[in-house]
Image (cartoon, rainbow, N blue to C red; front, top):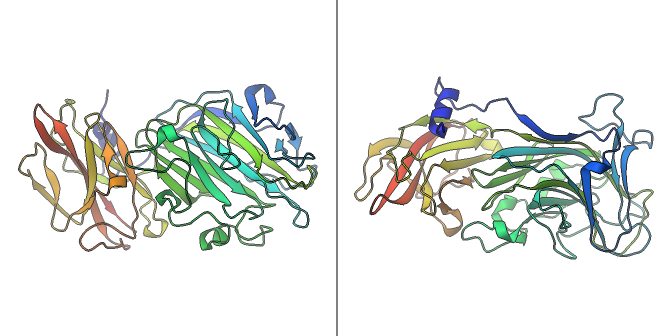
Length: 422
């Protein structure tokens, strides 16, 4: 098997690690024809909604979805709690299993409501589901894998929430299932549509209610990195949430609707349209360049390797690190510094490729465990002494230190990755 280090060198013959453009499509549905046979529909036991495949939403008065070709006017229309005045949940799992090291789900979404008589409903879009358990962020909390949930009218104190299965809770993280809005994965955005981030993301107009994607199209993207254990959620390309997880989010992609309130506004004006569902195997957007490698081999017989993904723009604050080929079950953490070096610390078999003021991502929630793991970075606070913010023009270097038994207790280092920020 070709090591990641070798693969990155092939990508980076000039020194810069670049993502390949190739991707392999796993599933796609433009909903132009009735594709209901490709889905398993799950309900919470109070069925009071509809699922209309190949629904001509343009004929119903809506604009064309942003990624639809001219004339492709159909989508999937979902309703919930149409008449009964009860909480109601519907989750539709695409029957094609998704098992990939890294993949991206993309779908266009329209959340329709009447501002005069609306009843808050939630859209939910998921990955890694079991195909049998409905998704709901509350009333009740339910789900598998991971999913994001959002309102269209800003009518909840938690308009944006995401769920991570308790079985996928990462090392030293006490939170699971519906994550609290102060969880680090919310990137400081919180969960209420009144927050500054959401107000800027969905201004009114064009949205009916500022801060929520009501009566407009938005494109939702979920990036899953099963190597790093990092999941990323975006609306219209804007980084919204990014969190860690253990294990993998293999399983089934899902689309759904959830009415957690008993008020009824009626199916004629309260519904969700999904269009252009796509799941493709794709590499992350690698950034930076490798240096100080290959590292000294560890007990696996391979060298630990580090890479970085995201963007080099400081304003985007969109970077996560990935360490691979580490000994299984051994702990480690990432290092950061602006000065490169080369030394073998006492008691270690590896070479530290940093010197000077070195920052350590060694808080309990930041500790990683082999054989592979990742960590989202906050560029506003690099943990050198004292912590500093990355600014445009800075060059930062990163490495991973980890424990090993080779054959006795020791430690080692990956190679390094250096990033010039813009």
